[in-house]
Image (tube, rainbow, N blue to C red; front, side, top):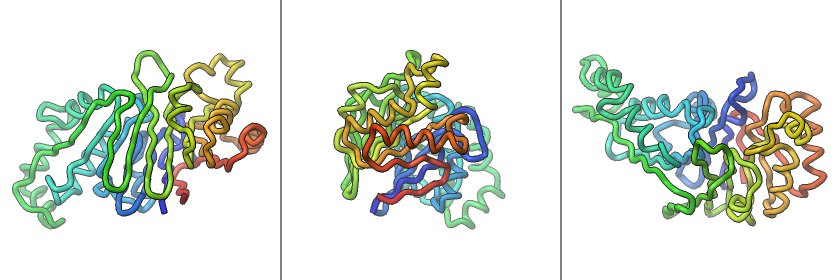
Length: 286
């Protein structure tokens, strides 16, 4: 069984129920993350998961609602990781994934004073040893890599591939397709409907799709470029033949009582699969 954990199902506007984008997938004995938006580390633990169990993190793009918890996740994972070099995190995403990682935790990174203090302070060393670690404590090493559309990565248990999306002109962005032994999940990231994402998502079991607002409202507000609303998300899901549509990146106006029911109803007029309206820390089994 593969479990999809919606850690963050909202937008840059915080609400009590949703904030930012972050997802985790449990498959076999592996835990894989996609994006790392606001409070992702805390919500990961709230979901009963643990940062050191994540060995792969994939970014769709580098808007802050998709990556702002990355420094927290890196530092927490390093601080709690007594295995040190035996449990290196691999991170993949469009530029500037590599540069961002170096600027955060590299020797001259913004958090280097924190890391240096935890490595060298006797009390911090004692805490690390009491957790099960062995001295000397090592500087964090993260295997971060910038990728381009079409890039793939495969392990014994799963495979990922990516395709370009159409979002904003100032940031490179991709959608991800994860294939496990149980199912295939596509994360659209932020995008308008486009052929590259249609091809990537074709025949998938699950599409985790952004759905900012009701489509007519987005058109009226001039907010339909580079994004998807209800009809765009539903139409993309129907075009690709996915069996389950999970709505995320849902805006505060869409995610109100009554508005949610209208959104799901409108989508079901054009999409014949199962529809889920996302909420933070919701787990779905596929």
